Length: 233
Image (tube, rainbow, N blue to C red; front, side, top):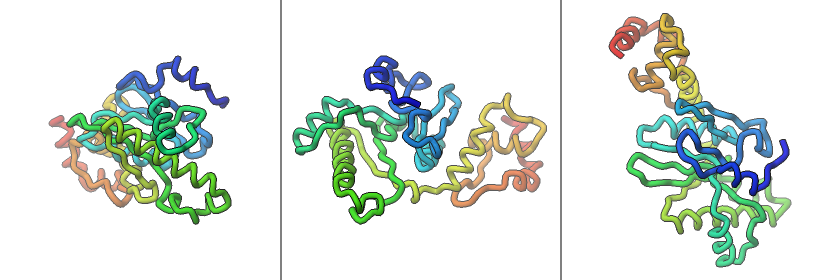
């Protein structure tokens, strides 16, 4: 898909509206590589654009937390502020608007911006991706300084997250149960469907971390208990 200009994106109010009306600066179908990009539908009625497997896993893990109020992915940065940062640090200002992967607002109203990288190795000059291009490595470091300093100036926290350190099984389990979020979309006579619905709404405690959950087996083993919980919902 042809990349839209910054002007077109501004005209579409990307990164302006909140909640279900939020539009990310980069949508899934605009990613440089769509092989691992994903559009994730969420209960509030919009779809979240993740551009890599790491972003997808991070999104599910954060979305399932009780203390997360809002997630804004592919968040555009104010290029006037970026220009000031570049001037202060002797960097060349990027020609197009840059983004931070996620800006998360927590229930206590504090915010943290997150930049996703595949692994810590990518920040090493000896990384295979950059060993043949010292300038590309320099741009990577400059970009991280821009993001970090940008959010610091806005009094917002900033963290680096490494995709290969995330609990992929946890994210996959969350993804599985979230598909059963809506009561109208499940077979209410099927214990496995009901189990996933209850877990998605945190109405039935089940450890989702570290290993893939075999929901069919759990439903068979705990069927009586599952129906009892569901009757009281």
